[in-house]
Length: 293
Ligand code: PMP
Image: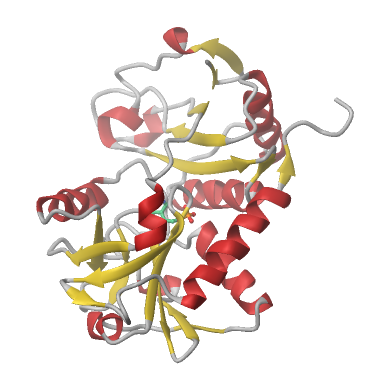
């Protein structure tokens, strides 16, 4: 496997960063998880934009232009001969001293890892997931804004630990006001009377790339989509619920806090959106191997 590290393509054993990198010492950095399907990178420009936006918010200057980074992502996939896979794009603050001061870190590091994807078990999609609400609240936007996809993921990890302790794989997180925001690594939607509802980004969620694609696909399929705040109660009494994310794609939720949602099976709207998503992902996007090459 070849890893892109600061302009070079290195075998994985040689792709190393310093123990003084503030990405490691403080989680000071940003990242993206990106998928490719059938030779197309899914929403590459949206992921790159979010990466640069996250970095801007942290006053972290990514040392190369977005076009160069786009080419590096595609080249990493080509060198690893991947048409289906998962890309992890990371920018760390770089090497500093043991203090917090980011100004001491003069050279941010860029890492691109492209690998095969470990897919979720098929029964998650056929039977739907059971999830629980956890006590860990999503980061308060004035503390660490959830819209920044930073290397500091402890908030989400604590939520995941709590979900696993309850015997389920995903955690529903609330914000400080008790409204539903998102899951530890996925955005959330409910469906009630054929209207699709999802929380707006300003209440403290990651503005998901999959989320935004699914909103567009839902509109194209003729559904009404509303971005509004809601509580757990609204999910308990919803007809359907589903999650979206780069790894999960679109995944049905059939139980929350031991309340059965709808009839307890993945709903019609969710199934339509799963099909629309798969069709889109396999047929559109940035080609990895341009025609004729
Ligand atoms: N929320 C959180 C907290 C996430 O980490 C992610 C990404 N795994 C998502 C939502 C989904 O975002 P995307 O569709 O861009 O992967």
